[in-house]
Image (cartoon, rainbow, N blue to C red):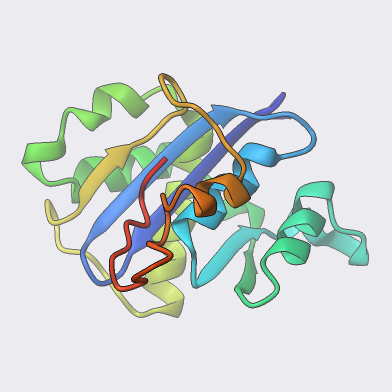
Length: 172
């Protein structure tokens, strides 16, 4: 139903930062896979409808094939609710980052992803964020160039090949 639009939300549990993304992608999902490889997630959460009856969607299959060492969890589709996502962000976003609300008001898919992620963190990780305590950033794909993850690694955009202590996991 998304007609090629992808919504993503990621959270860094150590420093309260929520990164939202929404972008167009085709059926190869190259942008999704690349963004996930750059984010290096510990866990990926998807709607349970992506893997119904043992026959997963193409995106689900690509993620399970490309991220074998990453925990994959599913949550009920009803938790992907854009209205609830916007409410969460209005409540949790720090005042310094409140301008993000203008950017994301019509980004239904990333808002839905944010709602599911924050509910998951609350129930599974037993973590609740205080009001106005979360740094919220929107990273669309406008004014960016997409390269494959192998090229990003060769260019040392993700990990410094000579000294892996120096990394920047949020370079896109």
